[in-house]
Length: 175
Image (cartoon, rainbow, N blue to C red; front, side, top):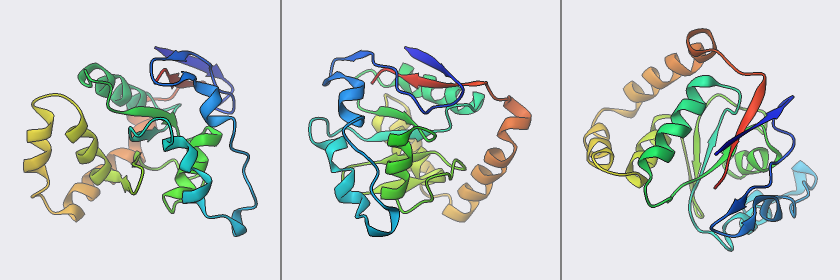
């Protein structure tokens, strides 16, 4: 269920989850330390202590991105992927963990316990987690050179607000 959060993604909705109680209990325990003295993998390891599923980071105000999250949720029958907006504090911390700037909302990112994927690699990896026929499609798309896939991805990402629009509030999804 999507929960709009007016004025951005700074606050968390607190829906009950089948995988660990209140959503805020997982993310609110992490207070951001000083950026230059942080091992972000260690600082965000609590995200994977109780729930090892990967986390899909998405632009919470982008209509295309929200549609993508809804598509993944509809095709992820086994609920193998969690979701977090890039603009949220948890999203920013997971971006840092992935070696990206905390304000970089230019790409979907898939964060697993031990590694992260960006751009077209993230999309292909997400496709592996959801139902048929997407894992098979991802298998064939991996043979398209990454620079070609990322070129197409970047062109859509750069124009996503112009083509698909944006919302005034951030959509958060129950994991």
